[in-house]
Image (cartoon, rainbow, N blue to C red; front, side, top):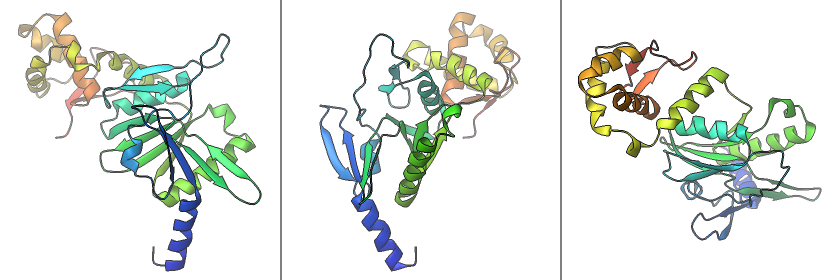
Amino acid sequence: MNDPVMAIDMHDRLASVGLRYRLFSGGDLVESTLARVVAADLATVGPVREFRWYKGRRFYSGWYWSSTTGGLVAYESLLELARILLADFDPDVSGIAAQPFQMREESARVTRRHVPDLLLSHRDGRVTVVDVKPAGRLADVKVRAVFGWTAELLSLRGWDFEVWSGADLVTLANVRFLAGYRRAFTVDTDLCPALLELADAQTSVGGIERAAGALGAPHVVRPVLLYLLWSGRLRTELSTVLSAASPVWRAEQ
């Protein structure tokens, strides 16, 4: 940015936006500003908003164990859980935080507040803030106003903003299935190097399983193969239903 006046105006606005987050350990609330907060500090925060469970609640809340963070990530709906699953599956994502902070900006006319649904940290240093909203709600005037305000502020901070309403159902079903094998301690990881070598000569899930007959029984080999697909060391086509015929190749090193 070459205009020093514009740079000062931008910093002043970011400094005027209050930002509140909750430490995961201890649960203490921290007050900061959008200008001052360190992105890395938000990667491991707890939900800033308290979760409530009660009979008749319209949304399904819970906790998801993330292989990316090695800890629990909260979700307030199944749609939110789906976005968390995709983030956990993404090898470029290094951190996932739910309801990471509350932004607050006051003016002479109005006070605006918003708690985004997710904050994703990326291995290249980028930050993506995500709001999850059903497609049918995106035309709502109030929703659009909040998202527009959020996107404007986050762009000044240099962060990306994403509004997510769902993914291809087959892709999501495949990722949800592979997530069952995301815990390394539940599979025989000693077989990983051998299976990766077999992938250099085989072109399908079934081909690797057949070639791995000497390594162990199918009920031992298959979980390791699916773990390698989840962890991204092996890749496949996710837009079609995962099967023995699914193509497999090594991820680029």
